[in-house]
Length: 296
Image 1 (cartoon, rainbow, N blue to C red):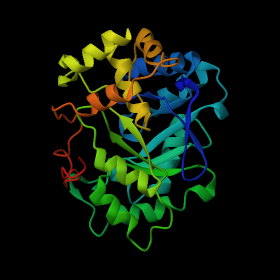
Image 2: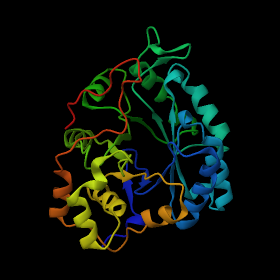
Image 3: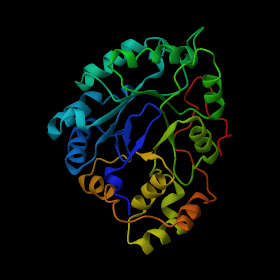
Image 4: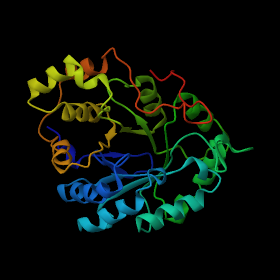
């Protein structure tokens, strides 16, 4: 059986992203530092954050508290929507907050170039294609090792990849993925284009029907595993990296106990075929629509 806690996925740049990471979205400021420290000391080597989360400084403190050398840790952060026309400034801000010289992966957080003076509007004469033109300049600086996108569906990926200015194919597309949001068409599209997918909200959420699903609970009981462990294994066996969020030490540890067992192909398929559909992250808060329901 694969040792998933040490597994990596090779990106189109040749870089190797750890299969399992710690997500930090919606983690309370007082809890993030300790969660990052605990995760790294437990063996995690991938930490995911974003400028928009407002916790990069605490994430950086947690990294330093862990005692794990910087070069052993994969750090992902993201460009916030109102910063699309200031990519260099966005990188500088994140590096300063994190207290590091470089990040391993820098993502366009959303395909929405928001006006910083009015978050309900888009920047005039700007879009994510222009943002990507600026993103493509980053790897040369050494301050960003790999670049990618987040929350990009097939429609927006087509716009980006088919634009003549697109010289670098995104290394990663970080998207919501769990059995109630499996997005098989989007996964297949990204695979065909050489884009690795990282699954966020991979455990669903407290409002998700997932934890009431009899198929999931039955599989978890049969395996002697928690439903959360089964969900993470489902994501890994689909070829995606996973970044479960937790601030509880025992759960952080439990989510990392993924070595020495796997789901059968039938169990993976059963979870992939759950009838319910649920998205944790929607696009109603953005000035434009970014999800079109065509990725299933």
